[in-house]
Length: 239
Image (cartoon, rainbow, N blue to C red; front, side, top):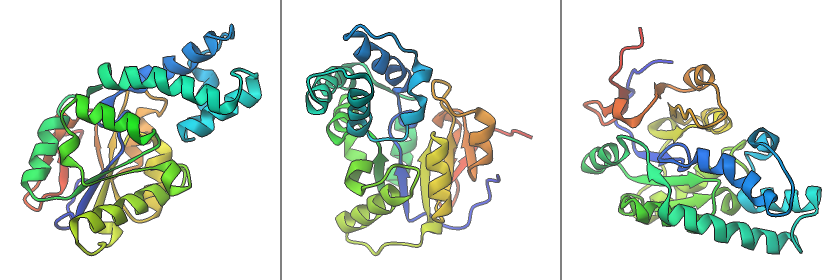
């Protein structure tokens, strides 16, 4: 990993949960809370195997495996109602996010979101925190047709961002992906994107693994700045 810039970035693509907003702790408790309504006791670790799935796929999986809810669709609706309340009122920005987005906007860098979470939930959190105006596109893994174990969602986010801004799709090496999830960092890197790894202490990825799987690593956005070319760089000397 190094901080060496290779020129002006043409776009920034951000994950949302665990990267822009501090929501992973809520997600870790959400699934146990949901199944507890049906008298089932599970720990956050019991849900680790399905973390990369989009929320509807994950909920449908637990309907099949645990037999909870009248149907998969009914359980998904119940879960979404619970989540709407949390995203509209409880999910907050990580430290330094707003200042970094303002700096990137001032530098003229187009920005998009690529997320595994339902679009309506992400938009609630963005609006609640007053940062929805920074992003020209928002794409979900459900829309992309693949989990973040594949780079499809980043590719689609870039395409829609460029379409919205009326610009040509740039080379992936000129685009930065901001992610906390190890599988997202790995898949975006395999597609040629440059990566900012954002450690989330509430998530499941080990800090050392995140640090090894990106070009720039930070514990918080307060450590990030833009260099003279507009590329992200860490202001903390880690030796």
